Image (tube, rainbow, N blue to C red; front, side, top):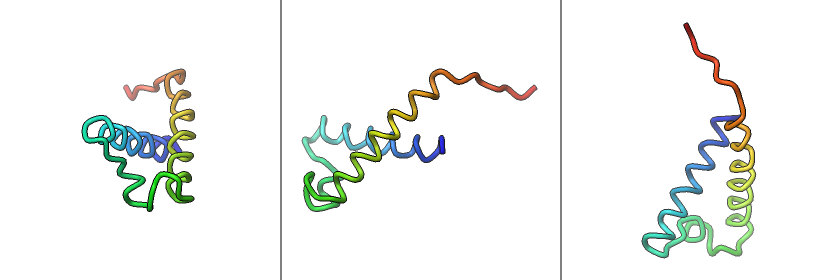
Length: 65
């Protein structure tokens, strides 16, 4: 679950990078506009993944000795 969430957060970060640099939304371009059902689903999943990744900040790290 951690890896899936991290992948979705990375997708969201790359998308925001493209929006910031070029004013181009990759998700909207791939799925027929930012208001389409698929785009909104991707945005929703990325948002949930971001919220889930907050838990990574508060977990104890287990180091192999």
